[in-house]
Length: 152
Image 1: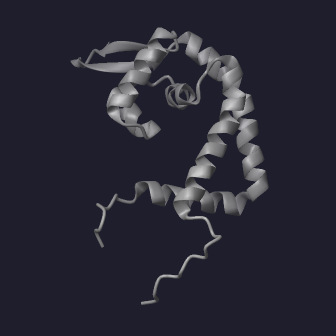
Image 2: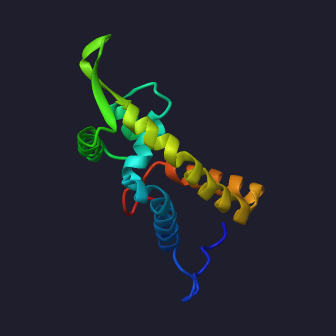
Image 3: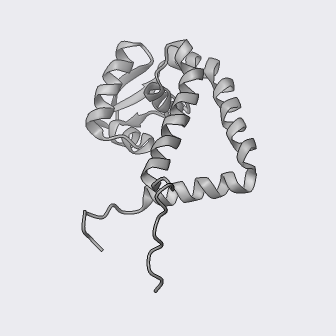
C-alpha cells in the first residue's frame, strides 16, 4: 500500500476546495433566483416539487440533502410565502404531503431558463466528460457512509 501523499503547504485542502466550490455555486444561483425574491434554499425545494407529484417531509429532506428539522422550518417559511402547500395524504391521514403551489410553479417557470443557463455555463467551462466525472465523484462523496472521527 502506498503511503499517503504529503500535501504541499500551498495546496488547499479538499475540505477548503469543496467549501469554496459550494459557496461559488450558491452565489451563482443566488444571482439568478434572488432578484425574484427566492432564496437558494427555497429554490432547492421548488425544483424538487416542480414535478407536481407531492412529497412527504422526509422524502423532501432526502431529495434536497437537508436534515428534517431544517426542512420543516424551511417549509413553514415557504407555506407562509405561498410557494408550497400542505395537504393530508388520503391514504394515511397521519401523513402530510407537500405540493408546489400555483404561485410556486410560476416562480419555477420564470426562473428555470436562467438557472439552466447558469448550469450550461458551468458545463461548457468543464466540458461534457469532465462535468460527468465531477458529478460522479461528488455523488460518490455524498453517498459514502460517514465515518466517526478516528475510524479507520
